[in-house]
Image 1 (tube, rainbow, N blue to C red):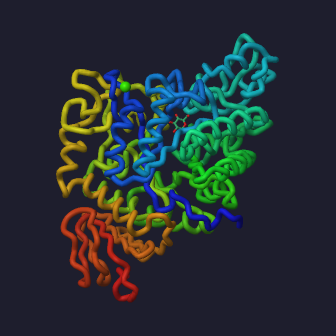
Image 2 (cartoon, rainbow, N blue to C red; image 1 turned 180 degrees about the vertical axis):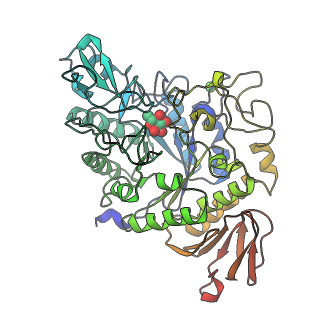
Length: 536
Ligand code: GLC
Ligand code: CA
């Protein structure tokens, strides 16, 4: 184990807030959220009690995939603002103790990126080797069976130079060739450019990607297709998840640890098993944080969640910091996905997310229990999920404007402006109303974050499962005990509990006596060392 294994880091016990910039707050009336909107909202985020924000892509992009097709890694998308705005945002956030993470896309670039434009200009151009080019099969056709994220061949024919190029996402997102050392040098400079400006770290897009099989072997079929096992019937054995990728993160970790405070690398590690997830932490020398997709895709039930959390703790290297999240711009919002729009369930989910040890990442709107929005086909903006159901519906459902108030555009933009995606039911769910109501989901979320900071902030608290039945999940973390009723029936706890600090909904039960949890109610209690005082 290396020197980083026991180090204290600001993200331990923290809460990060994923902010989809385009949908958060529009300050110039063009219907798109912008960096000035984030600056206007930093007081809100500081009031809410998060520790840092992760901004969805902010770099110049033709927006075929809304910023995940980068055309310049060292700039700011003009629609979102300027480099000065970014500097101001980092400074304003910093004054309130909030760190700013950017989204980095190292698996592919836009085909509008000057590297690709040059690479496509001729076979012996300076940047040809930055991308994955291949000749047709001897009998014609694409070099192998790999599929892109829309379910079609991942190879696009490039007539002028007579080769295919690889794109695991849209054909306007060309995959980089990480076997080329120049690509490594480019990204090391990109990291330093932003770290030097005070960016606290990166969320790394498609962190399980980067390297591809050198021989471009066919992917094998997958037995049970699903969001985690593989898409469109294929296991991504050769098109992703390659061992060489870990070397990249070892290099980047050294760069990140060279800064004071050390910069954070948070990977979008889309892998289906927790052994694979654990590998991204390396020996405390790769990513400091890795998104846990088995948790994201667990059913919202006591046995499933308890099992993933226990296995995560068993598999992660000692001292590694787990990451918990339940909504994002790809999978949609948990109040819909997990909770079917039932507010009690969403509040219970927030209580669990806020008490699991490690780092919790909330998605904008989670704090008010925002649900997915059914975006009519004519108004959809996401090309990748347009004509395939691998994303379980259009991803636009989870990208609609932040609901600040009850007005038709939800206070996201000026009245009369058409937002880029339609707002949801702003009258039913918005920040302004919930901020005034001490019983609202927003007030609960703020109380939960304050409790988290006071009790487990700055540490990776330990985790001990106390009960995991069909409907009841109870655990101790640090000096807290959490008991959660995952059912529509009352649930009696087997023994008395310590002082009850908070309940997700309904009355806070009194301490001492055997407690009956209401349907979908969770409670946080003080851990009482006497065995008789804990729930089992
Ligand atoms: C990641 C992003 C997703 C994007 C894809 C391609 O999965 O989260 O939104 O479409 O990568 O960059
Ligand atoms: Ca705007």
